[in-house]
Length: 367
Image (cartoon, rainbow, N blue to C red; front, side):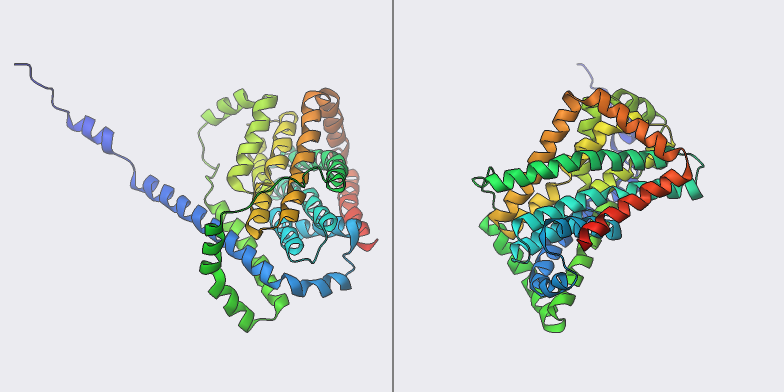
C-alpha cells in the first residue's frame, strides 16, 4: 500500500506562520480606513447642518461670484494643506443654497489649484532640514506647474459645460437605504451639536471633523520608509507615460486625496525611485482621480446640481489631460521642465514664484 508522506514540522511552520505584527498591522489599517470613511460621512452631515449660518460670513468677506469663489477655494486649500476638504465644503454649501452652481464650481476648481502646495511645502522642508537635495523641491514645483497649466483650460471648459447644460441629464444618487441609514446613525450627533453650538460653530466643527477624517484615512496607508531596494526596479518599469498616469489615478483613488498621493512623490524622488521628468503623467492622473471623494459627497448630499458641477470638473480636466498626454506631451514636458529649472535655479526666482501663487488667489478674492 502506498503511504502518504507526512508533512514535516518545517512545512507546517512555513505554511501557517504569519508574523503577529503583520496581522495586527493589516487589521489596524482596515480599522483606520473604515473609521476615516465613517468620519467623512459624519463631517458632511455636520457641515450641511451648519452651512446656512455661513452665508453672512461669506457675504462679509465678499465671497460672491466666480473670481471670489476661485480665490476662496485656492487660499482655503493652502490653509488646510489639502484640496479635498475644501471641495467637499463647496459641494455642501451648494446643496444648502449658499453658493450658486458657478460659485461652487469656482470654489472646487480653486481647491484643486491650491491642493498641490503641500507637495512644494514638503519638498522645501526636506531640502531645508533633511537631505540637501533639490529633487523634492523640484517635484513640488513641477506638480504645481502641471496643475496650473491644465486646470486653467479645464476651468474654462467646465464653465462652458455648465452653461450649455451638457451634463444636466446625468442623474446619480445614493440608495435611499444608505441615506436613511446615514440620517439614523448621525442624526443624534447633529441634534446634540445644534443644541450646544450656534450654526457657524457647527460648521466649524464639521470642517474640523472633515480634516480629521482625511488624517485618519491617511493612517491606513502603507509607509514607504524602510522599503526594500526592489521598489526601485519595479518603479523603473513603471516610469512610462501610461503606467505613471495609471499610478497617479490608483494612488489618489486609494488615498482619497491628491495632496497625499502627490506628497508620496517627495520621498520617492529623494531616494531616486522616480525622476522629475516622469511625474507629469502621474500628476495628471492624480488631478483626475482626486474628484472621487467630491463626487461621493455630491451623491450623498443628494443634489443633482452638485453632481453636475463635480462631473463638469471631472470631464473637463480629463479632456485637457488627454490632449496633453496624447497630442502635446513632448513640447509640454519640455516647457514644464525648463520652467522648473529656471525657477529653482536662483532663490529670488523661487521666492518670486511663491509670491505669485499667493498673490493671484488673494487678488481674485479681493476683486
